[in-house]
Image (cartoon, rainbow, N blue to C red):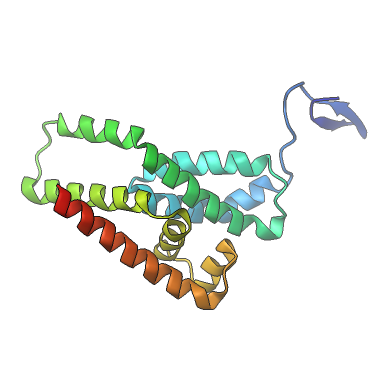
Length: 184
């Protein structure tokens, strides 16, 4: 039997071939964790639409996983950060949207401010993508509103080392920004 077994009149009946079983607790976990997953991804990507795409990927993976329910929030937060960083590193969607936005005739009250702000966000996201993964994830999780204890739990760190990890990540991010600013 390769498909999922379903109950029909108390008897297990094989589901369609090729489909994997989905967790029974998926809906409950989804309802509880969706806002945090989207917030973490949005912090990295700067786009709620893209963050919702990332959340969909993360919950699909979680739905097929055997992660214990007690570790779901931790797993989902880290998965959201990793998946969003992967999207950021690939840059395909963002580049497409930026090119589409540049071609538009939308008026801004101050076009120069809008261009500078967009360029600065692009630079920060690119520098974030160049950081070591653990530092980038710690920085994203902390700046997404997770407490030190939650970041420590999510990354299997001691709570006392989260501050150090985040400070090092911020320092590395500043160095990346400065290094690429001088080469532009």
